[in-house]
Length: 329
Image: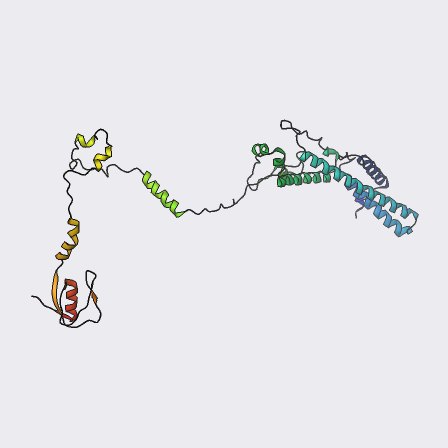
């Protein structure tokens, strides 16, 4: 180790006295007391290193005599006091950070009174870094358990909306090595780069068809498509337009016309079509084992010598196949 990191006997005695004095002040305090210098823990490290090298040098020169034993006791005492002081200060910082973070108002209209801040000009830089880390972890803990909702209820959920930032957003502290304020920079909440996909809902086919039909029903139609030409439209009489007293307007429209007659022509349509079809008279020359289907759907068993009147298509097919011949009257 370089000799520049070692302390002189006078410096070592001064640092040791500062360590013991700070320990006595911190013993009964619940907040971190002021340190005598900003590089306090660095000097404690150099003090212990100096004592360790002195002990090894004395053992090499004089052996394990009484002076070596005294230096070893001194070193052990410094290590014990430094350990106790660090533990008490860490507990005090943790208590201060948690009390400040979890401090709440006594009523709805009241505002929580903050604790006196720590004077970081009279504290070690390593302690400040530790305190900032504790604050960040406390904020994460509060977000995890929902501390604001627990304390403020629905009012806290409605009033507090945490701002989100784009991914890659940097704070001012990232551009300088020096601290801008006495407190750590607030934690940033970033937006999701890829939002979670929403569950696709299955659309009922009947609902989809009903929606299409409803849209078609609501679509305005062109009245000109259903408007009859003026030449073919006959003027309606006033009696047909205006309903008689005591009757609904639709009754006259639904009433049968006086000139309308009911006929049975629809019953004779099939007969007229059948009579219109031409028949051909043929004689069967060769018998068939299985019956054949005629045009009207009936089955016909053909035997040699039989004479039948069949439709033109069936008769032509039998004559061309050689199983029948024309037999006109």
